[in-house]
Image 1 (cartoon, rainbow, N blue to C red):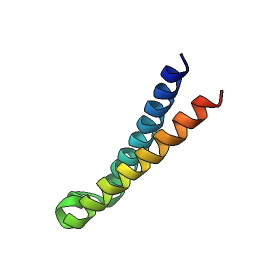
Image 2: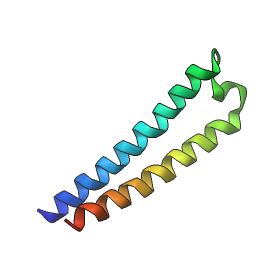
Image 3: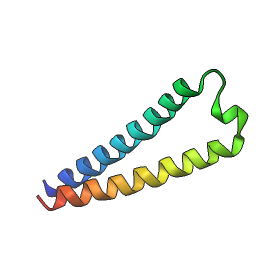
Image 4: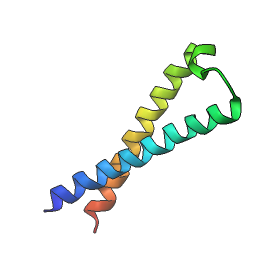
Length: 70
């Protein structure tokens, strides 16, 4: 039962990080106006996906650790 709790905590952390990253990208697109950020700056896509991966990794670790301590 504890393993399932850790897995769910890690999944919720990763989902939260995904919502945060893509929500921020969406809001940036609304503020910025027409045209994709990735079209104008191809390096921005690499940075975004690397940051998203790192954020999801850290959030899933924190979520799993938090769930294991309860």
